[in-house]
Image (cartoon, rainbow, N blue to C red; front, side, top):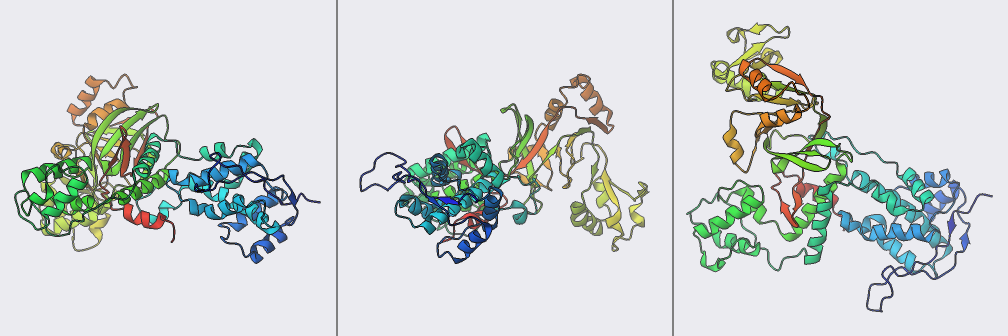
Length: 541
């Protein structure tokens, strides 16, 4: 006969030692194991699940059934160590930004606490619930609760892969649930920092005694009067930026409040201009609970990112306008960047640096060609000349703009290119990692724009401050391309392509919270992704 499916579970001892009657009851180990042989084949499991009045239902009954079929219907949770480790991870799911209730938390707590008095059917049910919980928890830790490719057009990072049943089999054979779950969690410093920030929020509380909300309205400039100014001062005081007396502010936007606003803008990646516009007011209105949700949202995103970023990589945090070069887990370079606008977002993806181009030409991307260049020529026949743009047909031959019927569809078939020069939008260098989005890193002639805090101003590509320095670093393993040689290439004005021989990956990521020096820093959600993601993540009431 096949081995019985379920063995009555040993009671679990109190997880935190003895507790008095006023404390939360633990899961206590009390009885010897007794076998239950009620579910010994697939049909019996299906019949049990169909007729069982128990709630909640399994999340993936087919996966659970397949697991037991592959294991000859042998029970697995009679091993005390295994079930204790699994339940402990479910209890601590909030430390990962996940939710106890998503993994049958309450049902497991009740069934494990009453194991000595459970019926045979209840212990059968407990066996199946534990398996179902492991499968879901391991998958959520490895790949996230949601699929970003179903949420965002700008998401190109491949989904992480996991075999939950294979992982459970390994955990059983090694008798180590903790090791199995740890193997699929993200292990990046930012993820660990976010978990630390989440614990800090829980420790100090996510509710505010007061959270003044500032009403919407027109832009408020320094020195102007507005009825909302007392609310602004009050909110800045609650957040610790304004040290004065809010009641004394009245309606005037004075210098003391301006300095507090600028300090807030600086810490949240906003344009530091003391202007009270929609973005600044929206960030001021976010409460501690909102910020707590923001951390949870960012933990979810990190579960979407590749586990192995490589030993040597460039990581771009889009909303923070920051590029860092990481080698052997140390950040060795950092650059300010500009990213795509709300309309032309910089996508999230990963790829490999392949070559660098000095004195690049700029081939107009399809979106800019359609939305900017062709309409521009229709408005002004001198548009192309003023911008140094030339037109080429499919054979690479030059096209005379005066011969083109700009009201037809023909202009869409042409290639538009700007040759090297001081006004070229790509500046002196571009760094290429071929991808479906036609995105790359590049220099820019408009270097003064890097001094602004809000830098979502490109058409999707990433403009880099000191792009020449970054390019030289990437070529530093090739001795022939020393500073003198690179300068000769630049001065020649000729477009020169140099293959990259170092193994350098590029990761475009998006996170709006980070733990720095034991302080959580929140970053402006420039593409307004956080709120919608929280609505999809939060547990159902």
